[in-house]
Image (cartoon, rainbow, N blue to C red):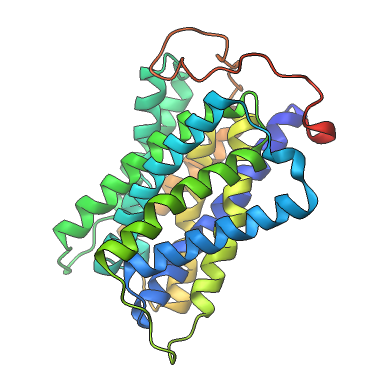
Length: 315
């Protein structure tokens, strides 16, 4: 396996680990008294602020980005910000494990967006998508329990929007380092979710409410974003999305420990199918970048020609 692909897989799995903790910390914060809009505004704002300070103090070269790339990051951040609002509103209505199961449908939508961008996927990739979709259907079967329909539709909407932002960032990442993309995407997300909190909520949590879940959510957001975009840069949005399904297993494991949630035997069968889909990534061949192409709905995101050494030793 090429070194670049190995690094991409490691980054994608790291991102999945941190993202798998996000619904658990988010559900803990909501059950302990934070509103969903407060949770998403606080975690996104703090994460963007931390990353901005780190870049400002130690890695100023990562502020550089070509104008169209910046527009791409703003667009991706706005889309993902709207998806985050839907995600945490849905999380208030659903168990953390069930919510993450529904959210795990996003690779299907990633494949759709990439095909529209004229980036065809391999047969193995489509097989893994089908296997993962069947696994998620098994995982979402909860015998004897009614499921909040509004929460389900909001979570699926969040998955659609999350899937849409990955191909946009993938185009930018052809020419820009992952920390730069993570920074501007998080700042753009903050510009969406923080005004939404002040417009539609403004309920400040009581002083007695513990902030530890929000702090944990903030740090997993920072680390997961950098790892996510590094994975997209190395192995592409589709493979990163499929590997990102490992976050589901992380969410299930920690939800059972910290939230007391459990799965039925049929759901565990789905978890097995999802694991097989993840393991099959070893047989995928990385696709060649299509950033030189002039077709597809994202073809407008192209660098005008950057100095090769602008980012120093990162590349």
